[in-house]
Image (cartoon, rainbow, N blue to C red; front, side, top):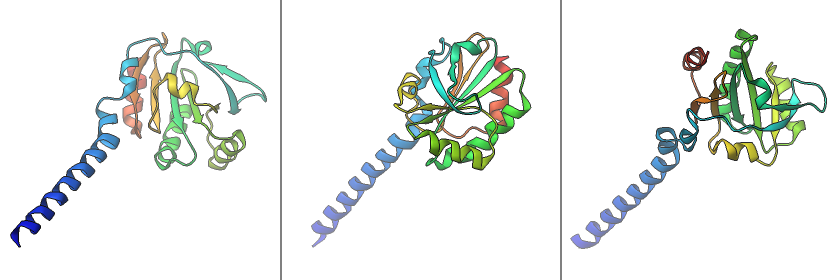
Length: 178
C-alpha cells in the first residue's frame, strides 16, 4: 500500500519539476539572457518599413535616416497586454524629447487598419510602422513582446529589454545614449 503513494508522489514531483522548468524557460530565461543581447554594442540592423500612423500617406521610414538621434524601437502588438502598459510610457518619452529622441512603434504582423484604430483610440503621438511579415522582428530577435531597443546617436544598440520597461529606466538609457 505504501508503494502506490510513493509512486504517485514521485510522479507529482516530476510533473511539478517539468512545469517549473517550462515556466522558467518561457518567462525567466528570455529576461536573463535575451537573444538580442548579441546585438548590444553592435550597429543596429538597418530596415525600411511603411509608416501606418504618424507620417504622410505611403511614407516609409528607414532607420539609418535617423542617425544622429537616439532611437527607441518598440516591438508590439494590439493583443499584448504588457504592450498596452508600455505604450503610454513611450508616448511620454516621445513628447518629452521631441528634438533628440525618436520613438518608433513597430507593430508585428497585424493589418494596418487594426494598428491605426488602436493607436488613434489611445491618442499615441509617436510614429507606428508595420512589420507585416516579422522580418524586422527577426533581425532584432524580438521574440517576446514588448521588446524595446535603444539605439545611440552613432547607430549602435545600447539597450535591449524583452519586457515592460519602467519610465525611469528608459530615461536613464536615453541619457546614457546621448
